[in-house]
Image: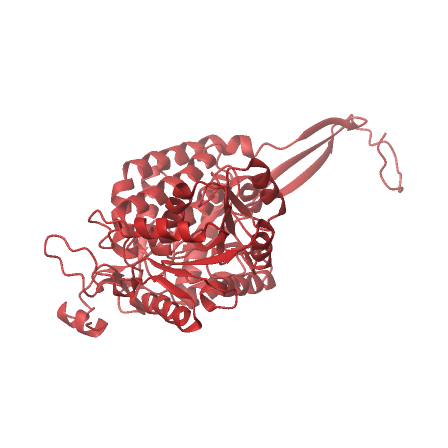
Length: 517
C-alpha cells in the first residue's frame, strides 16, 4: 500500500491543493501559509485538499465577530428570525444532493446515507422554524393585588459547537438551528477530517439572509477546541464525540463557567428474544451494525441473543452480509470505507484482539475486496468489510470498547433477565433496542433498561427533532440532551418579572418581607 507521502508526491505535493478556510463574519478567511491538516478521499486514500488549523487569534476573531453580531440578532424580531430559518430550510432542501456529495467525498459514507443525515438534520431546522411558539413565556395576571408575574426566555449570547466527523451535517444541525432561532450567535468547530460541509452550510445561511457574524466556522485541532472552552465570551459549549473527550470538554468548559452539553460514546446493545421475528432482527442487525461502516454513535455493536436463537440468527446475518457490496460510496455500494487509514488500522486491531481473545470470527472483514467500477483503482482506500464475532464474553475488548467500525459482536445469554443485567451493567447508556413480539416484554424493557434512547423492533432509535437526543451514564456529561425542548432551554436563560402599575402613590414604607395578598 502506498504511503500518504507517496500519494501526495504523485499529486505534486500538498502546497498546490485547495485549502478549506475558516468562515468568519460572513466571509472565508485564513488558510494560506499556516498550520493545516490533510483531508482525504477515503475511497482512494488520496489527499484531496487541506484544511486550515486555527490559531488562538482565529478563535478570537470568530468569537469577536459573533459577539459583535449578538446584540442585533438578539433584538431581531421572532418574525424576521423565522423568515430566515424558512429560507435556510428551502436552500438546504434544494442543495441536499450537492451537500451529500461533499460529505461522501470526505467521510466515505454512501450517498444515500449522507442524504439521510441531511434529512434528519433538516428536521431540526423545521422544528426551529416553530420557535415563536417554543419561546412563549407564562403570564399570571393579578398574582398579588394589582401585581402581575410573567416569565421570558432570552438567548445566552455567543455559543460554541464542537462536532464529530461521523455526521458532519446532522450533528451540527442538532444544535445551531435552535441556537440561532433563539437569538444566539454561533461559532462552529467541525471535525478536521471532513470540514467542507460546515463551510457549505455557512454559505447557505448567508444566502438565506442571516446577518454576518451570526454563524461562524473555525477549523482545526485541540488549539481551536481549547480556545472555545476557555474564551470568556463563549457562554455555552455543545459537543459530540468520544467519552474521554466529552468528559474533558465538560470539565474544562464548566470550570470556565460555561453551560455544557457533552454527548459521549456508546456501546449499543440489541436484545433479541426467542419470540422475535428473526428475519426482521437479522435485517436490523446488518443495517444498524454496518451502516456507515459502523461509524455511528447509534450503531448496534453488541447483539445479545437469548438462547436458543443465536445459531439461526447468525446464519441469517451471514446470508445478508454475503450480498453486501463494499466500495466507493458514490458508486451505488452498500458500505463505504472508513474515514481515515489511521482509524481503519485501529478498528482492524480490535478484530485482531477479538480473535486472539478467543471469540469466534464468523465473518472476517479484513480481507474485503472493494467493488471497483469504471476501472477506478481502490486499493489504497481505507477498507474494512463487515465483521461478525460470535461467543463474545464481556471481558473482551471488542465488547468493552467503543470500536466505531463495522464490527458486530454476538453475546449469548440464557434469559431476558441476564440480557437486561448485561446492558444495565455497561458503562455506556446511549441507545439500545429490543426485538420481540411480546408487548409485555417490550414494555418491561423500556421501563427497566438504563439507557437514554430505546427502540422496540427499531434498531437505531434516533428520536425525531421534537424529542431530545441523549444518553445516560458515560454517554452524556451535563444535564441537557440535544434538540427538542431541552435544546430550547439549553440555549436560553429564564427571567421572571414581577410588575406593578399603579397610581403615583407607592403605598408607604414597609421593611417586612413581601407577602402576597
